[in-house]
Length: 151
Image (cartoon, rainbow, N blue to C red):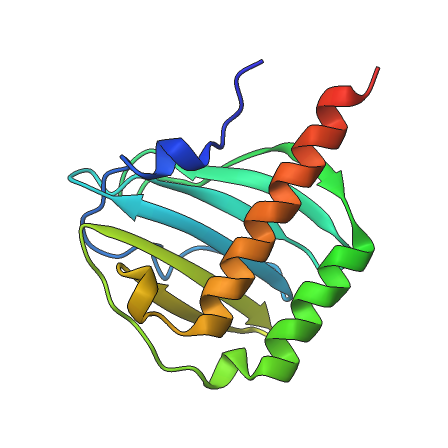
């Protein structure tokens, strides 16, 4: 079965302009991660809710609607750790935005406010943002593995 989301796909995604438009409607508390790159501004990633629901999302080009995939799975404990890691680590106080031909990010929406950290060079990006990004990737892999073993 083909999945909407593949990290290998992200390495060739087109990017032009803003990674996510400011017009995107978000739930009050969510964590988003993803990457975009190239000419058309397409992007893909995952979204995590505080109760542990994780799903893929994809945008075919800059300014187009976000297409949300089906729910991948739920891990409330992992979500609690990720949101706590962001809070205790001071994610919302990080001021870092470096766009490039391939830009990755983590965004955290809380209490009606969205804060994001964006980078094109992992080695220069804040460690907390890279850690959150990697933890979401690992959660995605774990839940995909679990869902593929379901009868």
